[in-house]
Image (cartoon, rainbow, N blue to C red):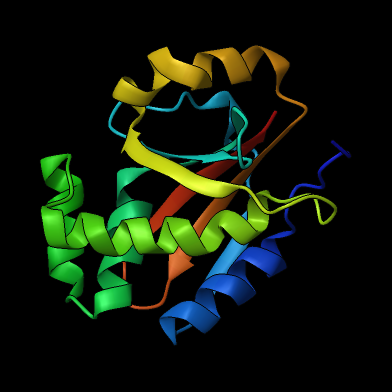
Length: 160
């Protein structure tokens, strides 16, 4: 597999803005020192027939904002979900669709684009392939994300 380039903030913003039909600002963050909490949601991406190749971890405010914006739920629904520490089924389904589209960011441009394997709370996803991936991470980038009209959040991209 060729070396993957971490996505530029502008690439993420353009992808999400186009999908959501609203302004999304993304900037690189120095938040790598901040630990990822167990309530974060991890989207795991696998290459066809292979193991986990990439993980994108979203904090709950980011996951809730993205899911709510896709289905045009009001901001207070996203804020309540983030406060409750979980996304209800409808919001979670919308968020999964966001993660599915974000698989475009997980590819290296050479081989087949990895597909979304699953979305799970980080506390549940960690014991599986993520712990195998983390020691061999070839790239990590932390981003701050602001979806127009919704609370700001954070996401982390990890490539194996």
